[in-house]
Amino acid sequence: MVKGLMSVLLVLVAVSSSFGKPEKNSSAKKEKKLPETLSRGWGDELTWTQTYEEALFRARSSNKPLMVIHHLDACPHSQAMKQIFANNKEIQKMAGEDFILLNLVFETSDKHLAPDGQYVPRFIFVDPSLTVRADITGRYGNRLYAYEPADLDLLISNMKKAKKLLKTEL
Image (tube, rainbow, N blue to C red):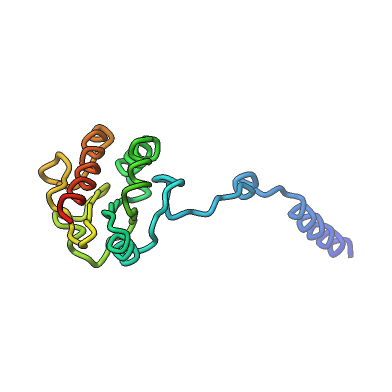
C-alpha cells in the first residue's frame, strides 16, 4: 500500500512540476514579426509590382521603363546592395518617379531576364516596348548585370540612361 501511495505521489509531483516550467525562448516567440511587403526592404515608400507579367503590363501602359532586381534573402551581396539602394535618396526618388519596379527572389520563366546566367544581385532594365535592355550593364564582364555597393554611381548613371533612352527612342 505504501509503495502504491509513493508511486501516485511521485506521478503527481512530476505532472505538477511540468506545469510550472517557463517556456524556453518565450521572448523570441512573443516578438511580433511584421508582414513582408512587396518591397522586401528595397524601399518601403516605393510602389512595387507583384509579378513579372503585371510589371510588363504597367511598363507598357505607363510608358515607363521596368527595373527588375533579382536577389536572395540569404545572399550577403544582395543584402549589402539592398541597404545601399534603400538608403540612397537619389535612387529612391528616381525609382519612385520614373520606373516600374519589381524585385524577385525566384527566377522567372522568361529567359531574357537571365541572358548571361542566374546570379544575384542582378539589375535588368526593360523598356516600355518590352525589350530587355542588353546595352545597360554593370562593370563586370562575367556578370554583366551585377552591381555591388561600390558600383552605386554606375547604377545611378544606368538608371538615368534608361530614362533618357526611353525618351529618345519612343
